[in-house]
Length: 364
Image (cartoon, rainbow, N blue to C red):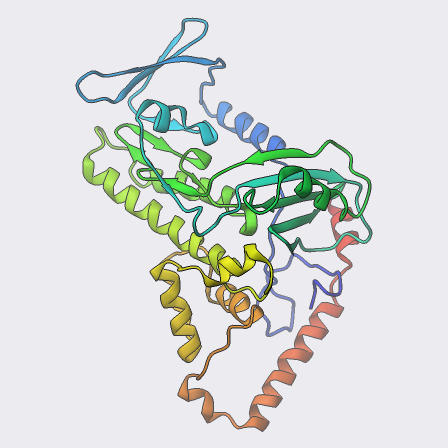
């Protein structure tokens, strides 16, 4: 209701309201955020060494990384290395030859073209994902521009055509040249191999449909901190870390596959293939439970909660055939009164919220 009214309020709970807090998310300027974290870390004793890695030195017996040697001849040794080298995986892949689990048969989009454009009016308080013939397009409103991108499958549309689709559907004039990104959806078979831990893109990639990359970086850091400080990381530590990392990635993978699999875009080869493909057993189980009785079981601390799964399944036409028997204890009149109360509470609370653009302008 707030989104449709272009309203927003950053409050835990409005006074006198029975409703829960408004859920929201931030958009960060990644460059500014990284610079902030650098200053924060260095002020607390972290030593930053600038340089291009020329060679990786390993220990003969164990195969562990012993040091990285820079172009200027400096050697940086360590007990534990965190590989943040992106898709390249300088340590985890190129040095340790850690394998890759490919999920492109479930998530075949392998390209993205991104371009900013002039901001539109009004500043909408939400991002928009629009299905296209062979993928989807994002529209992200920021204070000084609109972020736009077209994620697509190169087997169904070529790069020039995908670029034309994007440029033809912008709200304003582009403010930079379109930028092409290539990727493969999947994950390392081991996020922690020997004495190297992959964090971020070096550990795996899930396309940006649900904007999970920063979250996965943070949970990777949190997970690693669970094993510190100790001396001499053992096999049990690595195996447990890898099991937890894989479990998290697989649950997010399933949620993104659901968006594609439960589509109704008949007559388009890309979407027809995804609708009829075999899906992971973990996702098939979730769909079967929801179709049978409206149940969504959230395991442990997986990222997407019950409302998230329900929104996508109902929103894409998956409806339960039955419901929990306790629901029958409410008469239709009682249920109608309850829903009216909730609806009126939403409308009342949203009417008290400021305009989203005014709210953001006051903050920054």
